[in-house]
Amino acid sequence: MNHKGVKDRQKPEYLAGVNEFLHFAFIRKSDGTMLKCPCLNCRLVLSQNRKNMQCHLLVYGIDPTYNPWVSHGESIQEIDNE
Image (tube, rainbow, N blue to C red):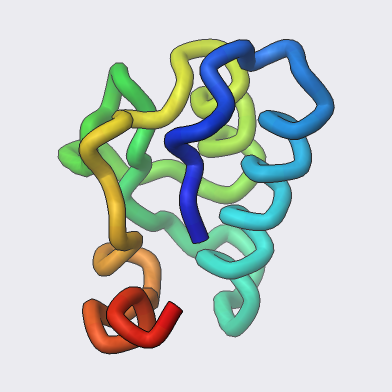
């Protein structure tokens, strides 16, 4: 999974990427789970629930250096196999 190709947060591709990321990150989590937020404001320091994280990613954008998504379940090995 890669977010680096879309710079304009208003494009449908960006919204689709945010939704794909949130699905991946929260797929096996219970409602109300807080995860480290990769937005440019939180930078994996602050945790957010799914709804707040979606808002943050749409308003602030995703930290372009956050790849692979190791804080949200993606392993280095998965990236090497792509």
